Length: 310
Picture: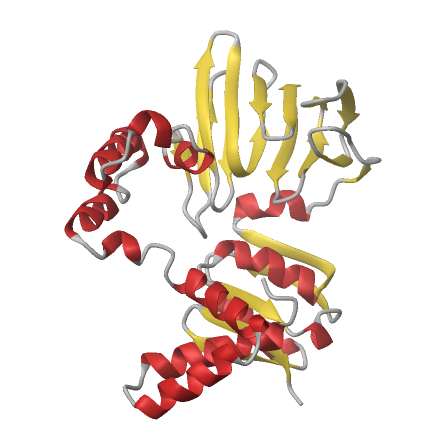
């Protein structure tokens, strides 16, 4: 995103204006704004990306067929993706090798704002957080997961073994309870019960105990920290904030919504306390406005910012 949230706000305002007018004067004024600064053009591009990532997909007959295929249930997603390649005239062997396509073809996945639950062989259970995609295999030796993107929480019974092959490394556990979040720049492993082994892709294996959490990438692990209850509360449909800065809270909440959600830097350090329902993010935003000196600016249905009252 642009380094200046105010420029993004201007771009969103212009998008809203152009969506509701056919006045040539408005378009000329928008063009003048767009060409006034490279930052304006960059912000405009970002707004377009947020609002219409799949707009081109539905612009012609083949695209509409492909869009319908992408709405199929997870059990038929692999076939749907093959059909998508045919509809778009793309060589499947090449296209399906990409990371994005592997996510679409995953055995199990959740949509933005959705939390899923799976039972594992041996009495274990697995939760998938918002926008998560995994491949899952189970046999007498245990369960194996390929985490394409997102976050999982595992609660393993005494007889349950689980391995998770993620972007940054391999996690091995037996009879433990832990979470793994594959974020944009690194991953975070949090252990709540038992012990878990972690081997970064290019590093040595390490063992972590209950109560510990560690950030890691493919090459190294950071020093362990304390695991936080908030890192497992999402499995119960709750976003837990214990004196969390508003900027960090909004970043977490945005994972459960489509579109753009941010807060003005001037209020980013306000503190948030409480348990908030992930199933109704609009209600959460209204609750924040009721308890903090902020207002919720809904420029568009998919473009929301938190701003100071004054």
